Image 1 (cartoon, rainbow, N blue to C red):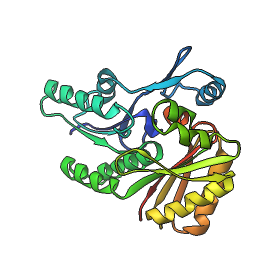
Image 2 (image 1 turned 45 degrees about the horizontal axis):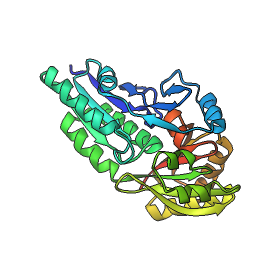
Image 3 (image 1 turned 90 degrees about the vertical axis):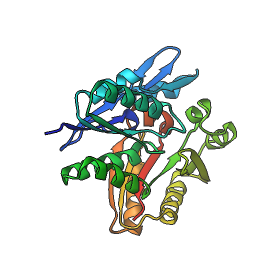
Image 4 (image 1 turned 60 degrees about the vertical axis):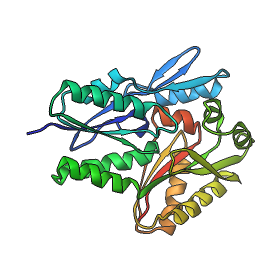
Length: 278
């Protein structure tokens, strides 16, 4: 029997799966003083508190080819899920690892999926892969179905700071400056190209959360799954869940903490929500 494995970079926030072998290739968060590896041993809260006080520049580093090969292990069929290629080199190094792995291991296969997203939307994709594998679908069918599924998912966010996004060229410094004013929360969504599209700038968290609910409705949420990731803001995540449950009674909503990479970009108080457009 062929060994099947799902692999993702650590921006997915997933550390393990219940029914399918899984491995995470860690990204790194780097400052002039410290380096944080986004793996299971990372103290995320300590990192977030440190970065919140840190005045210098910080950046991220994607998994290299060796990191991906280590995550592949000795599996025969690998489904590899990456953060958007518009914001990271993770997809490109995963493709390089795929080429090397398949060249050195005749008959083994690696499918690399650029999610054009991050965090909780990646989580939804990974768990859908787990479902397809559990249903006994063959490799080619899974590859085709997961591509179609990705077209039915999306991601939105609410941020209280965009300092790290701006410092790493992910958003305009002007947009980030507005979001940095006290009491101002920025909302937005992921684009089809995998970039970040800023939405409304709201005075206060509750108005921002209400704006997210309206945005999700416009984007097609009805009764699908919603995965809410938060960076030290469980109360905000719970309030968003309550608002969503009141508007979308059949939606299946869950909450989890951001891991390292997502915490770096969401920053303290930020929320990211992946959702199904059904």
